[in-house]
Image 1 (cartoon, rainbow, N blue to C red):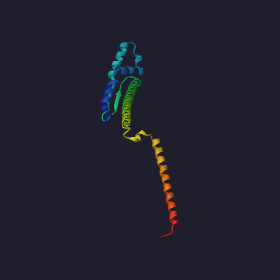
Image 2: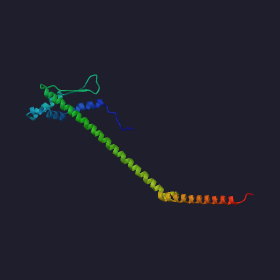
Image 3: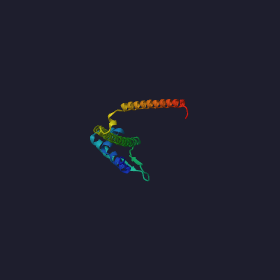
Image 4: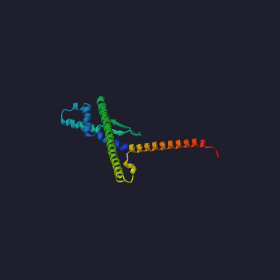
Length: 184
């Protein structure tokens, strides 16, 4: 109970849109799409980063849920495709990273729960052991182990069989004697 949280996809996507078009990601896109090769000075590079941040659009598709559009316009179609593809790659990688992080957090939580339950089990077993030790005199069967108890039961069984055999022998002897007696 309370372990699973339903994510708000709209908030996640809005936050992804903001982080997707952040300066570090745009610089990464420039390197991936080879747009940084056209810059010669740090000022040109900064201007290109600022321009890309303004030109890249990340918007939801109207009338559809969980569909979004990443758009970028450039004179060279290959450059525009490279920018959008790089943004998609960053988007997918960050979502996979979040899922891995969530899975790792869930695994750590479960491991902690297992440790807690193991400790509870050990405490309960120790309490049972202490109880048996304290009350050993009140429960005589605890003082003997199972092998000893089984041996005692086997001896009692053998004794009962011997008594049965003796009783059957005495019965048979009495029948013989009664058969020899004349009827009165």
